[in-house]
Amino acid sequence: MEHILSFLHQHIELIYIVILSIFLGVEVISRVPSVLHTPLMSGANAIHGVVIIGAIIVMGKAETDNYLALILGFLAVILGTINVVGGFVVTDRMLEMFKGKKK
Image 1 (cartoon, rainbow, N blue to C red):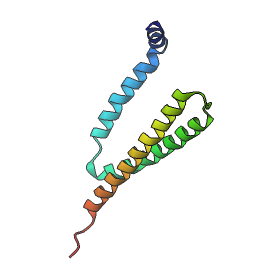
Image 2 (cartoon, rainbow, N blue to C red; image 1 turned 135 degrees about the vertical axis):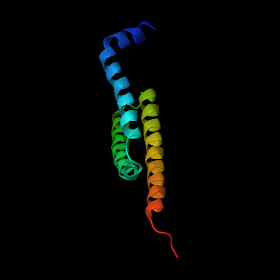
Image 3 (cartoon, rainbow, N blue to C red; image 1 turned 90 degrees about the vertical axis):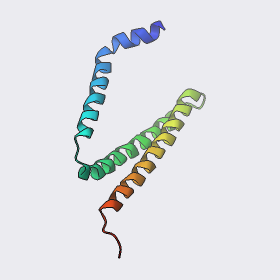
Image 4 (spheres, rainbow, N blue to C red; image 1 turned 120 degrees about the vertical axis):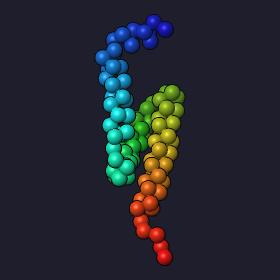
């Protein structure tokens, strides 16, 4: 428990920055017009693709006996992939709304 408290105390500024970034992100996204959500989601999907590549690289460089790093890397790849696929599905549905109805 002391290690956790000492880590929090040493990195308090970074923790404040992360919390402020979360609130700022929620505020910015909530004010984006609905017309711009599709390009915004496409950009987020591209960023998550970079996250997946980073997770694969980190997992590939982990030592074979470091099971924690391998498991966390594997989970990062799986969850990132689910996030990207889900984002593209939602983006596709949003783009379908803008298409005219077939006669």
